[in-house]
Each structure stands twice: as C-alpha cells, then as structure tokens.
Image (cartoon, rainbow, N blue to C red):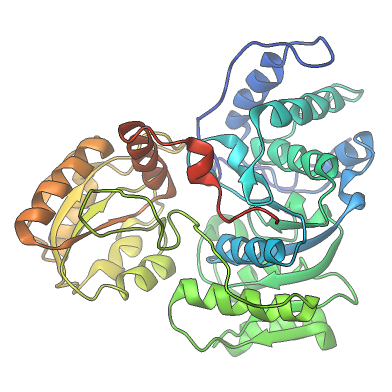
Length: 432
C-alpha cells in the first residue's frame, strides 16, 4: 500500500506544453502513450509523501545513487541559487544535472544537463522507463511533478553527470526530491506561500523546509531575522548548520553570493561566469526592440516586493497572475509605487490554475489609487501595446506577476523573431 499524506488541488509547478509526436522509441513501443499519461497526471494535483517515489526508484534501480546531489529548498530564490551553482560547476569542468520547476515553455526544460534542456528524444526514453515502472504490480499513479522528477534522475544517470542540483518542488519534508543522495543542502528564504499546505506560520513553514537536512551533511541557510525561525534550523542541523548573511539586498545578487559560498565549500574556483535565467535575471532576449525590459516571474508578496524595490525610473507595467487565495495580500507590494506610470493588465492562459481576471487585478489596483490602467487579455497583444506606450513615455517596461506570463510572452517573442527555443532556454555555456 502506498500512503498519500496530502492530496490537494494546487498546480504551482504545472504547464500545458507537451510534444505529442507519435514516433516509435528504441523499444518499438510508441512514446506517445507515456506523454499522454504525463498529461493526464496533471489532474492528480499535489500528493505530498515519499512512499510512491521511493518504490518507483527501487523499480528503476535507484538512479539517484549514481551521482551526488545538492538539494535546495526555500520560498523564493531556490531556482536562482541552483542556476548559479550549475553555471559555476560547469566553469569548473563539473558536468551538472539541474532539475527545476515549473517550466516556462516546454517540459524538457525542467531537466537540464550542462545548462541545456535535454532533447525530446532523451526525455521520451527516460519517461518511457518511468511509465513502465509505474505499471508493475501494484500499479502506482505518480503526480506530474513526481513523474518529471523521476525522469530527470534517469536522464542524469544516463548522461553520467558528476553532480545533480535538485530544486525542491514544495516544502521539503514530504517532497519527493527528499529522496536524492544529497551531500549538501541549502535553504533560501522563508516566507508565507502555500500556507494552506505548509502551515500558517513561518515556524511551521521553516520546519517543513528544514527537513531536507541530511545527518552529518552541511546545511547552508540564508540568515533569517526571525529568532524562532533560526531556532528551527539550529535544532534541526546543530553543528552542521552554516548561516549565510548576504551583503546585497538584490535578490539575484543574493543568489549569486549564496552560490559562491557553497561553491567555495566544494572547492570550486570562483571567476567570471555567464548565466541567463529568464524571468529571474537580466537576460539577452530582445523583448521589445530598443526598449529596456525587465521580465520577472515574481508572484508572491516577498518576491514582488523585492522586484518592485529595484525600480529606479518610470516604467510601463504588464501584470498577469494565476489564481491567488488572497489576491489583496499578494497585490499589497504595489502600494505607493509612483514610478509605475501606466499599467496593462493581462491574463496568462497556459497555467493549470485559472488566471486572475483582469477585472479583479484592475479593481485591486484602483483601490491602491492606480488610474492609468488598461486591460488586454492576450499577453502578446499586451506586449505590443506596452511597446507603444513605453515609446510615448520614453520609459522602460516591467513584466511581472506569474511565471506562466513570462513563459507565454517568451514563446511569443521566440515565434516573432524566429529564435531557437533550446538556445534561448540554455542558461549557461557548456563545458569546455
């Protein structure tokens, strides 16, 4: 019997983009069936617990044991920390596997080797193995997140990576990523997000995330101002706890500083390295010709506050969000932001959760005394309108509110400019 400790409808890590080419795999079995199975798993939501994946890993001959791992949890910044570590590792001639979620455009980008998403062929080969393992008796029905996680471990094993960097999906204690063989664990910020699952206090949330700690292995943690939160980590990891106190207040730079601390512990040299992490960092994409654009996946109070604090000059803002349990609280950081000169409200469509309607966001912004508001539900059309307004006002553009919004606008730009999808999704140069 395989125990499910929580079953909740929450789709923070899911998007709809899949490949359905019905070609035959090396085994002679159609690879379309596993893809359909993967798509159908979207409806299973989140099922926190380790039993299903633990059994699945045994059926798959424990691929996670073939490489060491760095396991990262936290409310915000965990993906950015992982991306920095991947880039630094590659610069040190370490072959890195990097598992992250959610994806911007295509599911393969959750599984990167040497900074580049695995090919559809590799993904399908590994997915087929996961699918077959699930059909052994007793049949197991993993979630979408669990399937992609298991697929990533097979892909990393096949690629013979030296180190896998694993981003936690949700929480830590009962997240399936807890099953990797972690030599180092790291925790970024602790703030209220997914409180309906992880707990309604910072201490409860910290307890869930701190549980990624492995005995006698270092646990790096961003220093938290709340003494009760710090006490959770101290009690959990004891002498294995290593606090990190950043010098910068910029979230992206904090991730870089944090990565350097961990890399130094690993003996990796720290020099200049390249990293493009779309939706989280400054990037090389020409979102709007001749207009400076800041594109941010910030979607909760902490990350939105951090992003808005970076605004120095007037901006046209494009905002779109997926469903929020407390929209008013999520929108609170937008109060008293005089440098937001004009706002275009749109609706990202590709997330599993429905978008917050443009009317709802408009009403919230009106309560915060925003007056120059326009609703354009199609994100691509919103980008075109922002270009016109930004040129009229001679200012830059900020795109914010949802990773799904970032993905849709990125997909629009890739199509518009005939860009190579995999080149855009490659986050750092390969091993040399």
